[in-house]
Image 1 (cartoon, rainbow, N blue to C red):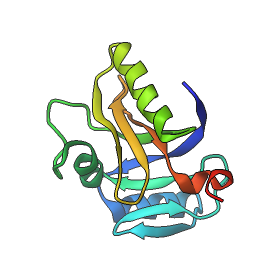
Image 2 (image 1 turned 135 degrees about the vertical axis):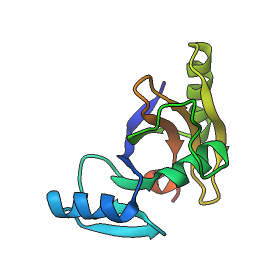
Image 3 (image 1 turned 180 degrees about the vertical axis):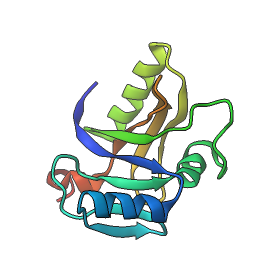
Image 4 (image 1 turned 60 degrees about the vertical axis):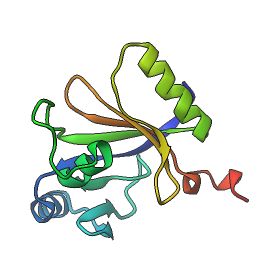
Length: 141
C-alpha cells in the first residue's frame, strides 16, 4: 500500500457537546465546527485532522443509517490513512479484501470530493483509506 500519512484521527462521540467539552477543556484544544456537531482541532500538528465525529454520522457514512448496527463493536475512534491517489484507495481496499478483511464501505467519492473506503479493526476502530485532493496541493495546481 502507498500510505503517505495519517489523514485524520479522533474519537467517535456519543454526545457532541460532551466530547467537545472534554477535549477542549481537558487538553485545551481549540476546535472549528466544520459541519453540525463535527469539530476539527484548530492548528494541531501530527495528523492533518483531529476530528470529533458523532456516532450517528459515522453510522450514516458507513451503513446509511443513523444507528450503529448492534452486531458490531461500537467504535471509540476513527483513523484515516491518506493514500497517494484515488486509485491507491481502490488498490488498498482490494489488498485488504484479499487479505480476508471485511470492507464496510467500498472505495467511492464523497460529496465533498474525498475518496474513501472503510473497514473496522478487531478493536472496533473505524479505519478508512482516503484521498482528499486538498491534502495534495502539489497535484492540484
